Length: 102
Image (cartoon, rainbow, N blue to C red):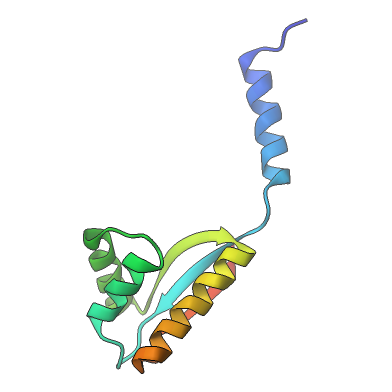
């Protein structure tokens, strides 16, 4: 007997949710020293945002204190956080990036 589209979607949906690895939000935090230009550069080069999107996100970080920059599997999230910290340290900025389990 053939399965209906609804049955197939339900099976794929339930299986997909259980098979995916846990995901982590990568967050940038505002500080009083890191330049807005550098934050935009990070958002473009590390997180792949467009100039327009990066600028909007930077303004959110500045006004709200933090912003989610992306959601990734654990190892990718860890690499993004480490990359942000390395680039910021190389420029002498205290830019903070953290991750939280989704």
